[in-house]
Length: 160
Image (cartoon, rainbow, N blue to C red; front, side, top):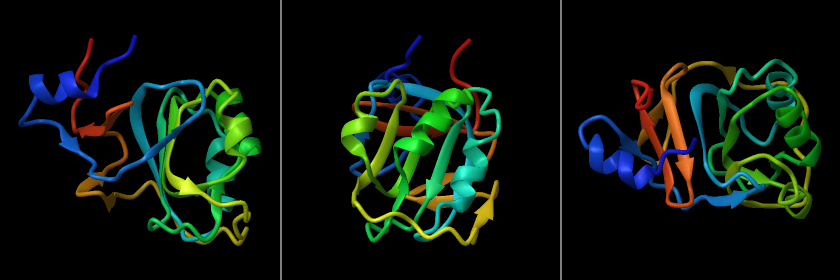
């Protein structure tokens, strides 16, 4: 079951926060939602891999890459890990690569853009702490809803 972000904004105007980033959508899953897990990294995706290697339990991984388009934080191999380990989707405030392959996969990913250069792998960053971009604070355990219209966040689950 999907939940339209526009409908959530109309029904819960005092509860949802709208992320004001013009994300591009990748993958065959156009809408996804789940509890938030967070990472803050810069041009380094070792922690992204570590997170996606663990059971996702239908959570959404929010990767704050500072909006950098210098290096890709997610590629097709990490997208496959996300699928295999049960993640609901990935939000990347930064770049991805292998976008044509990802577009053929059963995953939903939103990112600022693409770049062919792979990320560093030094495992530098922060895990499961509140992180902010696009006017929203993404707090682990809060709920994220994403679709073609954008990304909204709520401290509470907005569906049954």
